[in-house]
Image 1 (cartoon, rainbow, N blue to C red):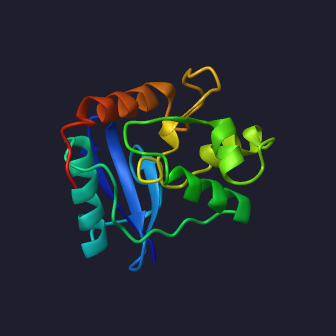
Image 2: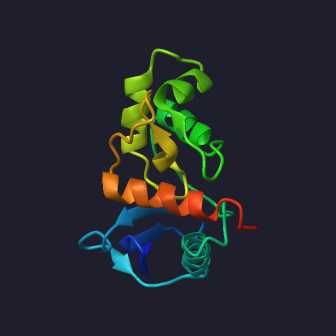
Length: 158
């Protein structure tokens, strides 16, 4: 069974979903309609790590994750986990990293379907010219996440 916990963050409400074994979802806003809400030890830990991230005290997450997606999406999401805190890569760089340099649009679609934004940092992927491009949470949130990371880049410890 999946349970959701909603946090108050600088980006507004953020809902974290998890089973007993792994974090499965991050939703910008309140928990999905009809979802079971509550807390578990894993959700409390996820909330603590996300709170530390927003406070500039954490640059990476140490949580068990369950990423439901196609094999290609999962490959892209694993590549996103290698993009350092406070840095950006392009869709083309991620496509090359997953062994398919012509798959920039497919990388973009995988980013859009990332079930764990922030934890799997799809906000760190930008257009070839460095401009911010699509983000499921909205460009304002993407900009805010990148600014938060740049602001805290040299002052954080894990």
